[in-house]
Length: 310
Ligand SMILES: Nc1ncnc2c1ncn2[C@@H]1O[C@H](COP(=O)(O)OP(=O)(O)OP(=O)(O)O)[C@@H](O)[C@H]1O
Ligand SMILES: [Mg+2]
Image (tube, rainbow, N blue to C red; front, side, top):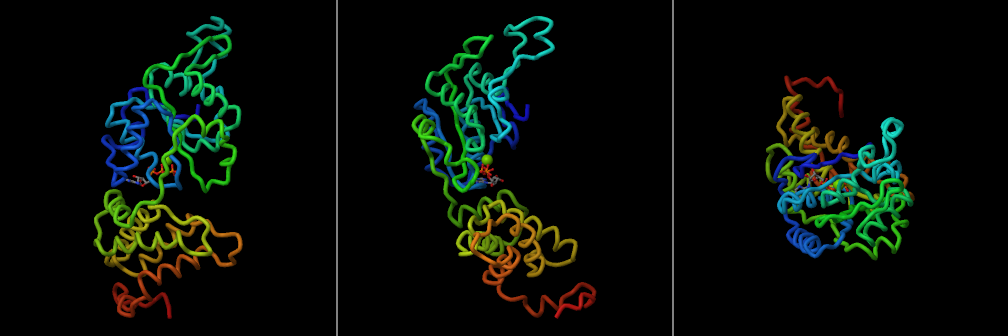
């Protein structure tokens, strides 16, 4: 079983009391939809806070939730549960020899079933979810019926930029869920997220890092830019680099190196473009932070100029 389950209802993979920056409207909509008994899909690019939001709402309302990573290996048996072959040999097919998967567990305990990247799961697994949403119960061969208890709901997350199977999320699914769109947050909110997740740094510099990351979403040669995760990493890596190099955290070169590391793999280039990701990150970095200041370049620790840089 690749899935992580969370029977106790406390946060499975995050700090207790997950704070959410902004997102007042989305929180309100999610709470109302769940209260109304609806199943929900949170749709938005990576890193827009879908998991954070769900976790926070579930904790706040003290709703137990079960977490499943959606991928091609999530077969119906992995989602629903399976009979333990060794136990079946000894004791036959009965409820005691059935090992609950995340779906059976969520149905029985009336929990939220959170499926990440639902667009990546196989068609037959999707069909199981459609059946459960329509009928409120699941029929498992040789086991019988598993009925959904009161609080059971499906909350799915989906990335609209994901090339894998997004189109497959058929109208049958869409017709059974409510949709909450999660776009990128404002620059102010993203800066607050970075402040929450990253180390203490100069405020203005942090805001510029966020602005740099936001520029990647608008560059004509970039198909999908970086999420706020890129900004969190730049702040963390610059802090570590600057400390190693004996520089200030706002050091121009440490920032550029961190940006290259944090962003060059994150941005998805448009197919038509001919430039490298590094090239684009460098361009955006200079647009945001200016050219390398001469005094910074001279300010090598111990006055060394061993790098031979021009
Ligand atoms: N509104 C927010 N408040 C607090 N933290 C946030 C917020 N949005 C994003 N984050 C932080 O940004 C990172 C990404 O957020 P999260 O994992 O919730 O995004 P996601 O939409 O679930 O991403 P994915 O689509 O990749 O699963 C996390 O470190 C999270 O703490
Ligand atoms: Mg997520």
